[in-house]
Length: 221
Figure 1 (cartoon, rainbow, N blue to C red):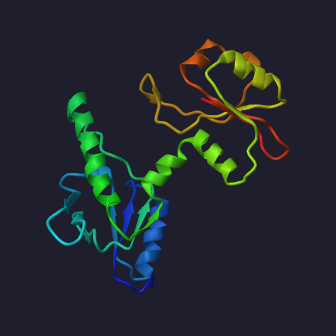
Figure 2 (cartoon, one colour):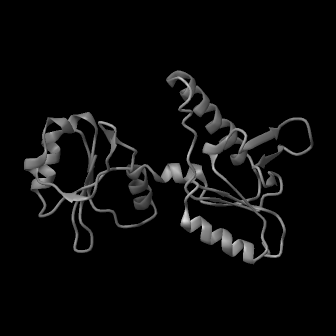
Figure 3 (cartoon, rainbow, N blue to C red):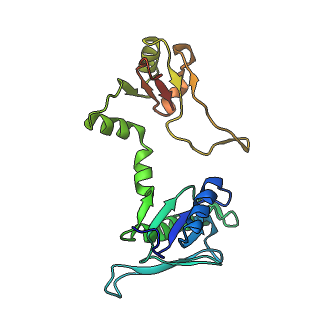
């Protein structure tokens, strides 16, 4: 795909994203059209239209922002950086959940239906990579070395594992927005011992891996 092509690049990201800004600056320097949008802006600041079954192509449509429009059949690449989905805080909880789902599967589904563009990275592939146990199994199938790993919500098994190794590190399976008393909090990788494990582990299964000379084990929930 030549840089001189005038087909647009979609950049899906949040409003304040310095990395995306730098990518867009370079694309502008190369005279590549860019349409930047954030799914959270759907409404007057973002519209999507897609038609199926009414023309020879499987889908025709567009994404439109206040300043740019991209023909979905003409998109050359999608930079799926750090987009956020709408929360619809002005709606009731039930109405908001309904609307959020429709945006995800309407806007998201229309974008996923595009044929041809290069994705960096495709959301469905990103979602698959979020599941660490599945990725560990895939890595072993591909011939990579995977340390013995345990996924369990059994405190006894977790205690046995942590007692069997010099160091075990606690880490969340996936970054997840989390608040306590309205205050955003996050978890960091940290050492954990058998003495730290209690019955609260039964709520969700963590992951732990055998240590090696180059990699600390992981113990996550």
